[in-house]
Image 1 (cartoon, rainbow, N blue to C red):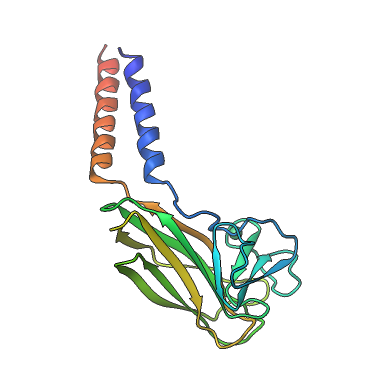
Image 2 (spheres, rainbow, N blue to C red):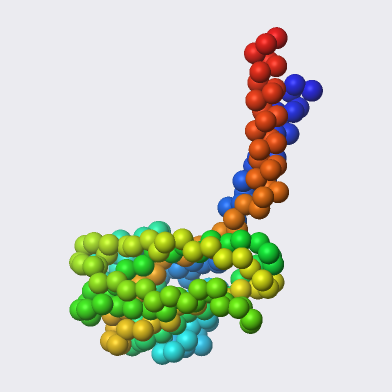
Amino acid sequence: MTRTLPMLIAALLTIVGSAAQANVISNGSFETPVTSTLIVVGAGDPTITSWTVGLVGVDLVNAAGNGFVNGAAADGAQYLDLDGSPGPGSITQTFATTPATQYTLTFDYANNYTTPGTAQALVQVADGANTYLSDVISHSTSVSGNLDWTSYPSFTFTAQQASTTLSFMSMSGGVFGGIMLDKIEVNAVPEPASMGLMGLAATCFFVVRRRRLSV
Ligand SMILES: [Ca+2]
């Protein structure tokens, strides 16, 4: 009993923890497909795994080998320039959601400094009936060697439908220098029931520990 209970608690914590951290966005770091340089992706082109490209087009960029912009990705080796060659562009992904469950959106953004000025994009989270987020992001502090990736303040919404759509649409006037995106995630927030299970597991852990210490 004293051996199996801690193992059960550990397994429970692992299951609850992984469920709470499940990212429902695919390819949000833009690491697929792999490019050593830059891929120009026009509207309707399915090249970028899991994302639909709209407006004119976007660029899938390798941070080290693109030949234009100098600076590391926020995550991994690649990122997305929302103004392609040429742009502007948009990207959209629809992901499965559980109604009445809370999700948190996070992402990092920068601007393509080769076109001077402020880059802007519209960020939206919506389903067929609800718009949860409609916000304009602006960035102008990227320079050669330091893209100054900025983390968007995490946004939490409660899903109402079985699927929800995330989109980014360039609002930049230039056709080449736009908002750059990386590390896009939507994670389910732990439900109260899950939190209760975690509390129960923690309580069991300390009871077992105290019993062991008192023996
Ligand atoms: Ca990346």
